[in-house]
Amino acid sequence: MLTLPREPRPSLDLVKDAIAAFALKGRGRARPDDLDARDPAFIARVLPLLGFLYDDYFRCETELEEQLPDGPFLAVSNHNAMTGMPDMYCHMTAFWRLYGPSRLSYGLMHDLPFNVPKAGAWLNACGAIAASPENGRRALARGAAVLVFPGGDLDACKPTSAQYTIRFGRRRGFVRLAIREGVPIVPIVSVGAHQSLYIATDGSRLARWLRLPELARSNVAPLGLALPWGLIVGIPIPHVPLPVKIHTRVLRPLHLGLPREAASDPDEVERAFARIVARMEAGLDELRAAGRHGLFPRG
Image (cartoon, rainbow, N blue to C red; front, top):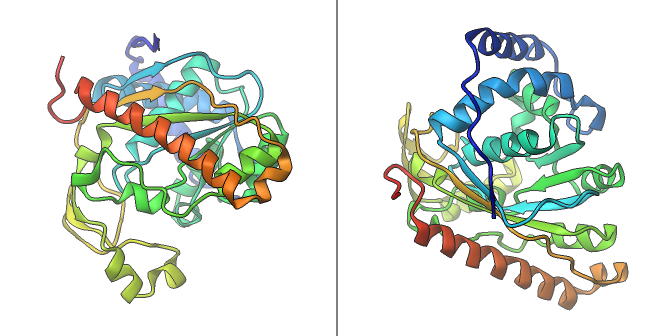
């Protein structure tokens, strides 16, 4: 098991330069379907600040069961903490520390953040592209590592009581994509970020009543508590996460070993899906038992 070490705290000049890079990039616009919007120079400039948050605020502990594949692969992760998404930033920072900003990598993202002023351009420059099978295919065809959170809002907005579960719903597109493109799946499990707020219910029934799936591509209308808003009522807006410790494990790659035509076979897809989720649930159980995460980590 490889554990990423802490890095020295960045100098004040590097932090100031990272803030300046964010300010400059925020003047541009997001291009959700443009793979060339990814900017390795921008990533290199902001990495010291992200690294500071990684080491000192979230106290991230990232473990790898083995090194990542050299070629293209699909990284599949559970999701936590509503739209604050500290787990996503930690995954990105760990990858860049291991392989540098120059190694081609993308993340498939819901289209809503692309419309948030400044944030869309920042995420786009870090490699975020709109979540679609075509964009995933194009990124893998370039030989990239591609990160996807199949559960999306269902997983990120699950109740706090369900924080150690995988909620991918009926979403199987990532399995079909991996089979069609013949790439391995790298499962990632993470715990801790969901304790950065409290979610009583995901409000999925309320969301259906309000027709949010059709109107806003949102399957949830969560109820809970988070900083700085206090009470969250139905709108999963980003929050200021508490300084929780995040523990992540990158599991061994899964080579599905299926012919490409199996992507059109629902039974084959379902068996592959069950295999992936079972491995992730076992990994989550191990991290939960270790207890090195959340507001009050053990050890």
